[in-house]
Amino acid sequence: MATHHALPGEIVDLGTWAQDVPNEKTKVIAKTDEMELVRLVIPAGKELPSHKVLGPIVVHCITGEIEFVAMRTTQVLTPGQLLY
Image 1 (cartoon, helix red, strand yellow):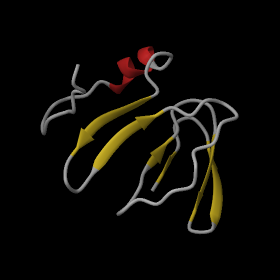
Image 2 (cartoon, one colour; image 1 turned 30 degrees about the vertical axis):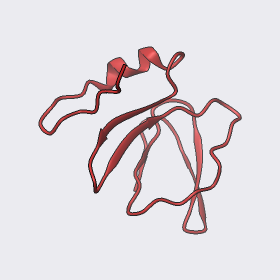
Image 3 (cartoon, one colour; image 1 turned 120 degrees about the vertical axis):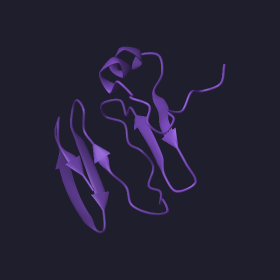
Image 4 (cartoon, one colour; image 1 turned 60 degrees about the horizontal axis):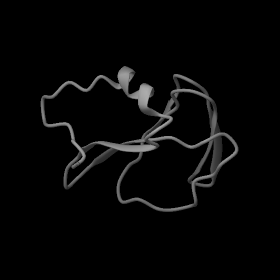
């Protein structure tokens, strides 16, 4: 089955997406030529390998805690916090 990406003007209820976390770790919410919006689940104690992206990045911590390193700075995000 093809992954559904939100269309312009489509409401996405991210609250219901938490229900499928045990089954589906990463999910693309929307994607255009200029932007990709992804829900990424990183299990406790695991690490996302270092990588680079073109353009800005926004990290929004939903649950747990994340230590995020960018621009030679390490910051800790807790639930509800967002980093640009």
